[in-house]
Length: 393
Ligand code: PLP
Image (cartoon, rainbow, N blue to C red; front, side, top):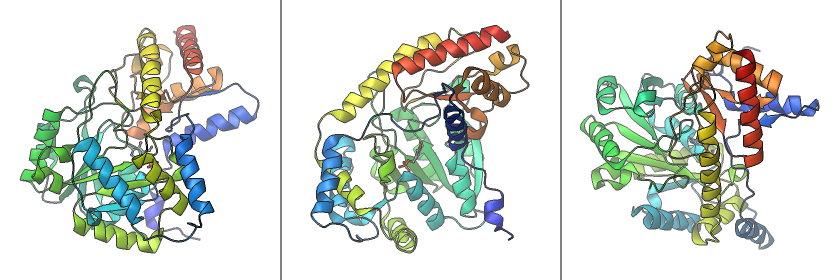
């Protein structure tokens, strides 16, 4: 069977690949510390689970409208108003099966053959693949490490062509944890307004920000920027609900309507009980979102200083999300490896620590280390990494 061209160039998600390898070693009886996870290690707060159970007991087990339950849209509208002082109508909201599928649907809705999407690197692995699946062309601009992994207006201006359809902002970022300041967002936003480039603002890590920083959405900065932006968000990271698969987008009603039509032929609707759980997530609050955020911050502060004392490893301190993205090029060279990918592989084989190589994120000198795991596991992982680097130096 000859497969379609669109899947022949598709690369499997590197984050999933390392997690699978770590699982395999664990099943063979090895004591593996997996720092590849892209999901919080906490359980979903109980009040959300209860709301989903209740919905099923009450008989809410059927299809819902494709773009989500009206009550859930209302709850999301309330969230935008409360957290970001953004006013949306129900026609400007779509709920889907996770932010990942929302983004997939968005690219399908806006891209034609040859349309370009500007993606800052390091990037979340699915952006370029999803753009290609929609026949679009990903175009990368490098968020330089010395600039805190952030791109500049100059880089954006230079990358825009008549084919540019959209620009992706992911703040805080997966994999770097970098967060754009209000002024930086305003300047990047103004460039997009000037060239009529749609801004796709992936704000999935909005709630996970540290050191007193506050998250700003580019859509908050002016009515024009709000109209120019599709905000993408979800409950996976904020409420530890990765398996529930609920994400959403807010923005221009024409785009949202097209996405909803597409969803009606692909998913039909996001899972009904998960939608009810999400209504609770956004209309009640037992403090657990903040408790989880504090736990992540404590872990970050606990391991960051130690990580950067390891020879050959440098790291820009992240401001958000739950990843560290150290540059380990020198350590890999010190240890006699030709590239960081093989260093990561050897670390897993020999010390049973699973990191994700940065090559999949467009940053071949770096690795992604997720601190969505216990502090004890993180400390032990650092001990092993340090031992590995020093033994081979
Ligand atoms: N966007 C970014 C930057 C992510 O890291 C992820 C998850 O890893 C997603 C979107 C998708 O989240 P979900 O599909 O679980 O809502």
